[in-house]
Image (cartoon, rainbow, N blue to C red):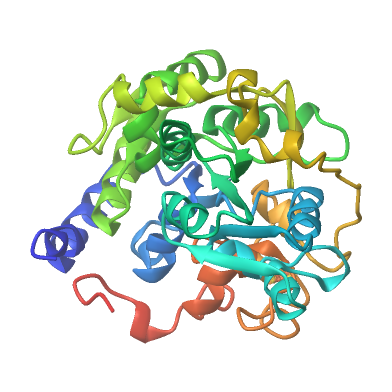
Length: 386
Ligand code: SF4
């Protein structure tokens, strides 16, 4: 904690805000998408938007792994968990995400399914060893940050000769989602989201490096600044993006030099490449089917693939018509555009996935009490983190 305070210092934030204000051209607008829910959370929690000039707009992106899981995949997990021999494990947020027909893994558990929360993928190994007569399924979700841990789980299961453990793989990849947002104006039924630059995710980039974003910066002429999750990280990234935009530049910069390199973590990449390969296509909530946007388990590790072992089925479902999560995930709408935000839909009784996870935009908006463009005074101001 000693080191974190330096990244939340109110005086430094005020100085950075002044620098940004001096750099911003008041005759134009800057629309910057923070891809990751971790950034969204920091922005709401510390009132970062309130420190920026009004013509710098932060657009919240799809980087919340719980939020982007398509409902048919969640329904399939619930069906699997309901089979008598199965113990299904997943990260905590996932069990509360609403599925079709107001179901959820939590409700399935209340009805007798063996659903357990895990803090780490490797916990599934201990459960498998302790319960040799049960089928342990790890419901794996997340971006490139958590994929190596799932790969390690599978490698370790094979090393130990475990036969009663499988993975339901829902790992997705960041670059495909960014590309989909940049290509969105051409997609049917979607309105254009103006984006002048991206605040890139630091934890994902610690694994994949900064190099994968270079293609976007070059092809789409959109600058990318990879940033840490503390408020001063985000503000510095805004400053770097504004400077690039003013200078007519579009390249990848790394604000998070304390954790990200150009080529990332080679060891983590190697175990992911050993176990996983890209799917031809995968459905994302809000973004639809995206080519080469998710991982699946290679056939050489087929015995650990829950989709193969249990012949899982996906059934198309309709989203709740009132929930605006798909548009919010695409950056087209804000939580307050949803008529049931904070009334019918709350963190205690979520209707959509964006209200569940701490990284969800609706949950962050609700928690920090932002109404329209105002924010409750208790949450404004850096240097006094809760
Ligand atoms: S407030 Fe609830 S229902 Fe509305 S968009 Fe957000 S998650 Fe969906």
